[in-house]
Image (cartoon, rainbow, N blue to C red; front, side):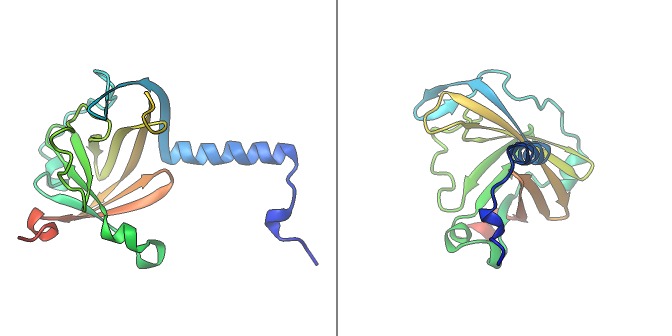
Length: 184
């Protein structure tokens, strides 16, 4: 009787190759760069000036592909999500100045008073090239850490849908008006 594959002991060089391959795949699909130092103000990690590498100006043509007056709400496949994810999906709102705001359904607007574009928790920057979208964001390496890592993810815009690959996981967002997401 053969052993299950997870109990087979890997040779050291195979382990090393597997680790290198895993990091290579993660880097290619969602670039992560570390080492940015920050200070906290009112519980928010504040980005140093000129932290973002995205400097591309958006064109009128870009706004034909991406609606900055709407919200993009994350949608899930029932088979690959849980009740908690479906009850509190992520919401993206893109601005004309190249910034985007990331929020969630249950906490939408709750932190607007403390959180602005200088906060790593705000969202980040984006740019478009043809039907491709690139987003840049920063996250603390751990809770209350003064070290942030930079994440650059990419995806595509197709009609009213955005598909982003973040940490090797595909996230789908559907364009909705504010009133569709938060009916009066």
